[in-house]
Image 1 (cartoon, rainbow, N blue to C red):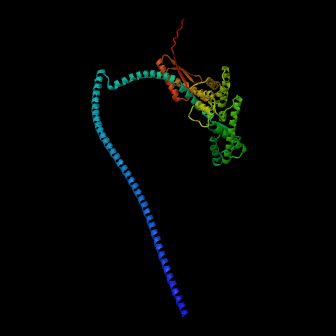
Image 2 (cartoon, rainbow, N blue to C red):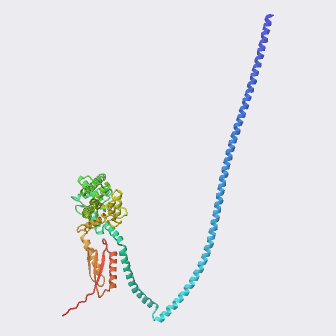
Image 3 (tube, rainbow, N blue to C red):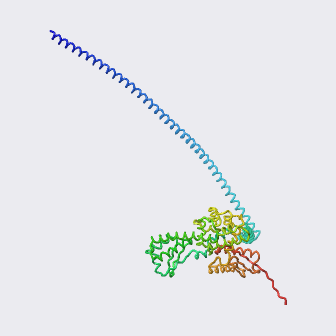
Amino acid sequence: MSIIGILIGLGAGGAGVFILQNVILKNKRTQIIREAEQEAENIKKEKMLQAKEKFLVLKEEHETAMKEKERRLQSTEDRARAREKTLSQKIEEVSRKESEFEGKQTEMELKAQAFELKHAELEKTQEKRVAELSKISGMTPEEAKNHLMEALKDEARTGAMTHIKEITEEAKLNANREAKKIVIQMIQRVATEHAVENAVSVFNIESDEVKGRIIGREGRNIRALEAATGVEIIVDDTPEAIILSCFDPIRREIARLALHQLVSDGRIHPARIEEVVAKTKKQLDEEIAETGRRTAMDLGIHGLHPELTRMVGRMKYRSSYGQNLLQHSREVANLCAIMAAELGLNVKIAKRAGLLHDIGKVPDDEPELPHALLGMKLAEKYGEKPEVCNAIGAHHDEVEMTTLISPIVQVCDAVSGARPGARREIVEAYIKRIKELESLAMSYDGVAQAYAIQAGRELRVLVEAERVTDLKADELSFAISQRIQTEMTYPGQVKVTVIREKRSVNYAK
């Protein structure tokens, strides 16, 4: 019985434990469910809050975008209205101008009609007057016209000559400076008869076989040489000579030296030509710089800027009217030193200004400036003293002289250029020009003799007093000067002097 009771007690205890466990599990499940529901509710509330915030942000962005679109649309509408208003104003303006134009056109048509009527009336009146004048004078209209024209011609010729003489005298007074500029520029450009002599060098060769090697296969060597030096090389039938033609004497000298080296070496081909020409250019640049330094040293001039020294060296390869520019500048420098010493002025500055007075003729680039002004600017650029710069710029009266050195340089430049033998001309061309001057004057009626004097700078014409009056002498002088100006080429200016002399000769027996 006790065992059964124990078993029953165990069963009842197990059932109670089971029931208790079930109750505990049920309570836990209920609690978990409640917590899950609470958590779900919290998550739901949080998500709804986030959704509301997102909605509000999107709504605000949408409203901002709509406002921006409305603003742009309003701005576009405003511009459209403004354009429409402007277009309407322009249309009104065009309409108004069209109306004005039509009114003016109508007015012009009326005026044209009135003018035609007046013109017709004037023609009738003119015809009546011509008929009356013809009846009074006894001449036809054509005869009266010819008579009047002849009278007017004589009167106009006399008046014109007087007027021309007055204008010429006035021009001589006012144009002296301009005439000097023109003469100086013309001398700088070198006269036509000197162009051939000063633009051509002759390269002598031992035999004509060398010509073929210089020309090369299909002319490739000579083309390479011309391209490298910028010099025209003329190979013709002249025995043992090749002509080098170029206006730049430095380029001609480079071509001559390069040709000499190529012929001496014997290797002549395009690559070798370019190499030799480049080497020759470098050697010549060094020689030019050395020439400038040696010239300055010989004259006792110190402190020259290296670029000015190089320009002095370049003068060796430049000529002016047949006179070597470096020799001319050295001569001017020495003359300036002598004159400055005699006048008690600064000899060194005078000599420096004399050497540099023509540096404007030898720059690497040649702008359209007179060489005196260009030289003055270069001297200022490279730190020369104001006295030197003024002397350079004023030696052809381009600028006003401010120091006593300036007139000394001007005078010494004229002395060096004008001394006998300093500047040469081709004799044949000189004689031909002189003869043409005299022949031109002799071609006029009443001319007894004509003499070209002062190296062709003046033409004196002797006329017969019986055939040429004083008025005709003025006309003849003007006519001859105009023909010389238009038909002949000459340096400087030619003065035409017509001399009319009346001689009365009687003999007492």
